[in-house]
Length: 477
Image 1: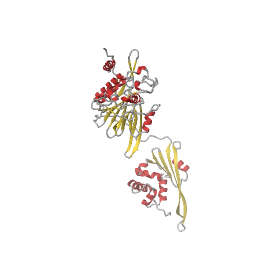
Image 2 (image 1 turned 120 degrees about the vertical axis):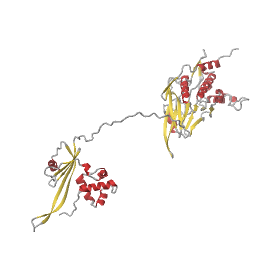
Image 3 (image 1 turned 90 degrees about the vertical axis):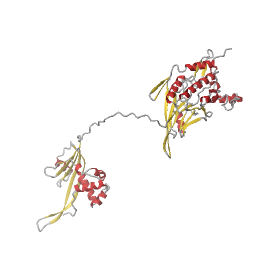
């Protein structure tokens, strides 16, 4: 007889599963062979022959036992075929008289229209046996074979438990209470270009600034009560002070009503939040006054009254608008003026332009390491960039909210096909650098913010009309 030990492979299977499940053995045939004192080729061949398991299948061995694998066992009548069925899978194992796959299928009476052969193995080994009568026995080697096949149903059937629809019990989410956090609000107002064109025959004034857009912005400021108010440049157009283009007669003698109107709007914005830090950042149009003095009236540059030597110069934006009396700061002249909300957010007028929509913000953010809020281009543009540093990742932005002037081409230097948009900037920020930008677009005197509609009021500027008319009235003798 053969000198090979006989193994109960079902028992070996359970031992292997237990060893892998407990972590005593890695899911490898080499490790199992050492732990069970069985040669590696023997256990590897047996697991393939008996269970159809390859080395890659060992990692899943811990999750199931042999009893989990076999749903039904159906031996044939003569005991020469063992059939194991589990759901849509079948394992068929032949006895010693079956030597080919065809014999196995015929003996098991498998309908190949219902089942498909997935794989099969034919194992072969030699066994020594004793033959002959008593006194004349002799040993011979015999070839033994085992045929085993794995099959799957061609049309799978539903298995229990059948997958059923998931039923979720939905409950209303409790509305969170707003938290009074250490976030602050900044409001950025850019490019109203307050100014007029004066009819030479009737002396009627046509505004370059859009009172409807300014009124919508004022209503929003009344609701927000910002911590910072930033007048972001080009609040005055000052067309008659420019040498950039030929000045038509309808631009002359319009500075006085423009100064009065700009100061009126600034004062009303300041009243929405009296304790807010309020700053005017001059733009290139405010700089027209400085350039004109340097070019044509150098003797008036930096001129101050005898009783106001500590005040801004007589011919300066600060003095003309009366910023000091309103408690409004004034930064350095264009283009150097800016303010910082925290160490990550800067508000400026801006001096970068690009012709295509979105191109300016893209250009600015590519050259920046912090968030920059700017005007100058009269377009709504927003671009983001993420930077990686020693403390992790942070997001920065370049944002132009749009303008507050008319966008129909009436502003000197603009064409009828100007690609301009109206809007303002709402920035939530914390002292540690965190910030969130909320663009607020304005269209035809309307804006939506936080679910509320803001519309321009028809009578909002009645008082302003009277003030401007009185200032422009010709004194009588």
